[in-house]
Amino acid sequence: MSPLPSISIKTIVVATDLSLSADTAVEQAAWLAKRFGGANLWILHVFDDSFLASVKGVYDAARWSGNEPVLSARNHLSQQVRDIADRYGISVTGETRTGHPATEIAHFMNECGTDLVVVGKHGENSGGTFIGGTALKVLKRSNVPVLLTHRNTANDYSKVLVATDFSDCSHKAARYAFGLFPGALHYVLHTYYIAFEGFSRMAGASDRAIESYRDNELQSADEKMAQMRATLAVDKSLQVEWKNVQGYPGREVIKQSENLGIDLIVIGKRGFVNLGDHLLGSVTQNVLYHTDKNVLLVPDNLDEDKIS
Image 1 (cartoon, rainbow, N blue to C red):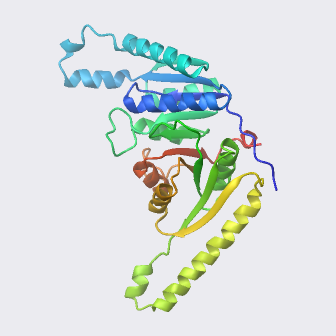
Image 2 (image 1 turned 120 degrees about the vertical axis):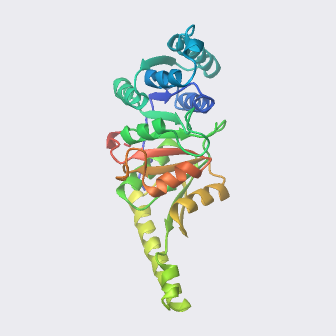
């Protein structure tokens, strides 16, 4: 058995637009900073002056004449930094930038050498169904793990679901999750989909033939899961359950996370599909849009030295 990988989290950056969703992200980032032995926490707010100009164009500009939004944001952030530092007993620094949020967040991540980025699932203007555009762009640009928060976790992540398609990227995500939360019960989940089953029935395939097809798909999934298990060769001290289930992948990940009482979903991120800047691959996208769990995305280009 291989020893558990050692994950060092020294610097966490949490991006905030000062909304309620972002406050959830800040609280979760602070909790994680304390959990990881007092990691340095940066709370970053990017003031989008182009957005303010758009708002002023819609509403009566006279209402804004006496306000200094940048100063107001900095004052709010300073108060939040003091509050978080006092309550969690950690090192917290606030930083404000002006410009395009996703671009400035990416620049700041590189400047401070962050190990983990935390972002609220919904921005102030994204509504309750879709992930905010800024969060998606941060996901696209990040070469470090990104945690999208939907809820606060007061206790440790005790149940972690790692979604796998048996790719190298999902292997890396599993190793990262094992090392980050060694005390958790991990479920490594693969969902296999029987393509064209309905069409096969319409074309006259017998129940026996379809059942044989299902058995073959399950056998193939079991063999690949066994290979993944052998490759990871996890330490005996780690609690892992390996699961193959039939169904639509995105929907099944959400269903299993609910049935198992999962605290965190971990997915390997292999980049965006070629459908513009705002979309992830369909399975990951489906999970991110519809789960109420926190989701950790581990990029395929994560430095292997960070999982040693």
